[in-house]
Length: 181
Length: 280
Figure: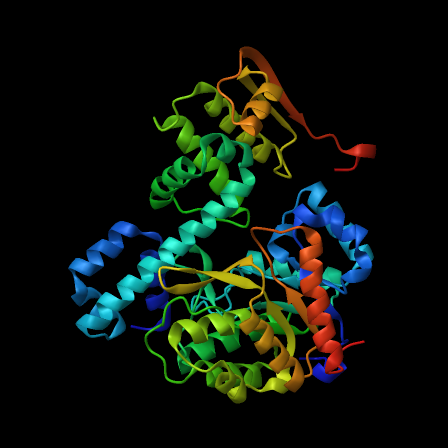
């Protein structure tokens, strides 16, 4: 098997946990791909596992920077646990993959049953909207929230309990000065 | 390289730019000789990031550091990413730019991290071909960084130092020697980093990276999240004593301390370089 095919297999192993588990249970497939003995297959799959874990750790670090308020509101353990579940199902792509990852993770959390508190769901939507609005070609983003945005931010920073409900609208508008885009 | 390494300017000691310390950076401009920027942050950039780049370029020498060119990809380069990256490099006209001896993409999967290539003749041919492709599109010299070998790729036909030496010889590139990665690999794989340096063409070292990592489950991790440890300082000094290095960058990414602590490490690197007359 040439280098291109090996790299394709490795890329899949790094990003696909079920595939790694399959390889461990079918070492012959790895042996023929990499010309390894049985012990070396186990070692390589183990190393791929560690690499995959470090990938998820790296992705989480980048997403934490992009969703800082949600991370603070959820707490480290809950955020980490949820991200590990999310990361096994989704691999980001593209030059802005960390931003795409953060937006996708926020959407994943919003749709899942992991987040019990409605205000944290709104906080996730707020931070995801900010990220989406920062796209160069997007000029207008509008979201409706069940809580005042300032109250959401304060609750996250103070790690407080739910803020009072107050409907609010967030509008992100990019206007090019002097008509320049 | 179109410009000989000896003719490259000596820049001194600097920082990998990180947005959280932007304000403090400008308050302490005189203590940072140059900046390394993550090139990917300025591709398809928002207006704010474009303005940030202009501001940085107005006040510092910038070295673009690519993350996703995937020079080790046997499938070839992503032409769209290649063109955007090289447009940035050609626009900035830095003294040099850098990328990694690694692959980050295969089978339309963006791995999201630097994966090692096997130290094989086939991998050398792939790297050389991809590097020549970019060298045809820019005159700005490219330097190549050694990465952490998080896993040992099967199929090696030579050691890493020999592989790097041959790669530099065939491409004419300089070396971005990450002494933290060298220390991490030597620790995790049980070899002498000085013996590794002895096998490298040290006259090709253009720039250094240094920072600190942490231990996890018995492995040293290059997390870029801790102060530079004494072992890495020792390696940095060893290289500066022996190689005509033009610049050293503190590559702290996470767990950022107060800015004066980063400056203290930059000052320390600058002082070592001055001791060996690498820069003023």
